[in-house]
Image 1 (cartoon, rainbow, N blue to C red):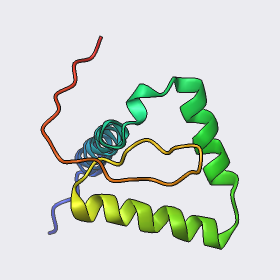
Image 2 (cartoon, rainbow, N blue to C red):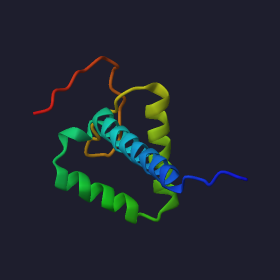
Image 3 (tube, rainbow, N blue to C red):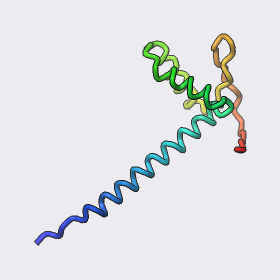
Image 4 (cartoon, one colour):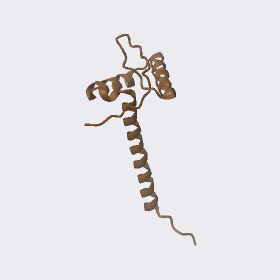
Amino acid sequence: MRRPKDFDAQLKTMAEKAKTIKDNKLHRLGELVVATGADTIDMETLAGGLLAMTATKDPAQRTAWKKAGEEMFRKGVRPAKAGPSGNRESAQTGNRSRTSA
């Protein structure tokens, strides 16, 4: 005779895995915000920028953003703030520690 499956234990294990995945995603997003220097922007401005990005349907703009992000990850360099012309210049690498208030 076959042993019955313990569905409650499986559900609990799956729920714990889902929570771990969500926590890891949140942690990585926080690291990305710090790595890009977006932690110096106030929350309302950052939220508005992200909303504008998600609303943008222009494939050329999205491709440009993707290339800039890929370059940042490839070089491991924190980008400089965009100037009035919107051009980004790479900052020099260095270990910068940040403390949270």
